[in-house]
Amino acid sequence: MAKRLQTPERIRTLQRKLYLKAKAEPDCRFHQLYDKVWRGDILLHAWELALLNGGAPGVALSDSHILVSVIELI
Image (cartoon, rainbow, N blue to C red; front, side, top):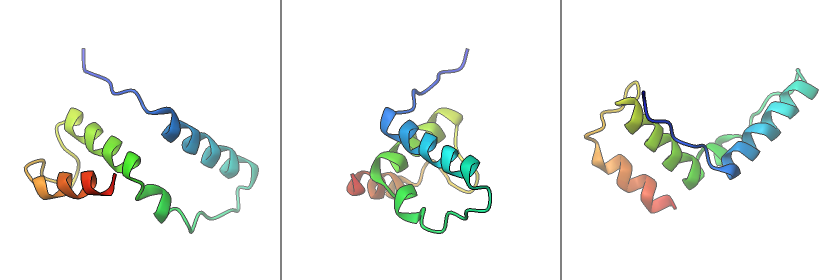
């Protein structure tokens, strides 16, 4: 069985808010999500998911400078 990473509650809260907003206002466009996606906790969680998945499209896990950049943001 594959390992699973539990999504932190803070990220789940953001996901729920975005989901509810999208359902309530189908014509809404989320133009200002850059600051949300660039949050340190989200980047770290995405990196951990990529590690568990064996990588992510377009990202070599040997690129340690990416991990250093993520950790510096936190």
